[in-house]
Image (cartoon, rainbow, N blue to C red; front, side, top):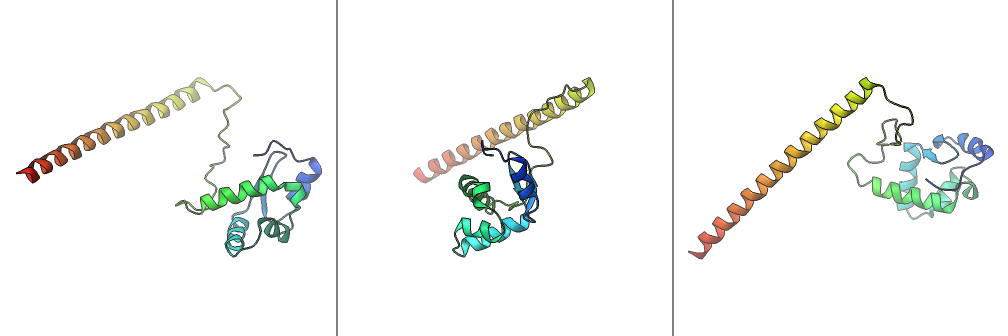
Amino acid sequence: MSNIKFTKEQVEELRTNPNVKHVTELGITYTEAFKTYFLAEYHAGKQIHQIFEAQGFDIKTIGKKRIKSARDRWCDAENRLEGLRDLRKGSSGRPRTRNMSPEEQITKLKAENEYLKQLLEFRQELARLERQVEREQRSSRKENLK
């Protein structure tokens, strides 16, 4: 997300572009179809600003830094198992600004507790497996020395 905010006019201009899924004064969310199109054109050798301009974007409005950042994110994302799909589940990950009810606090703490229990179990199992591998390596070295 850029520090440079869009004006209301720029937000409205960007909102009319069919390649924009969502736009606020702080950022743009592009459609998955546009991301796929962008990557295909980019890998075919086109310049990033040419791809955006061909799809009706004003480079001055968006900014070169935003476009380069989008390219970097999408190139990284295409190597993930999930691909270009937006992994956010309707939440930006920002902390809540409202106070939670006692029931919500309990639910949140229970979920956090369960997560920490699973993490502890995972680490214990990992340590056990590492010890097992070390024992097997020591015994194979002893056998090789005989």
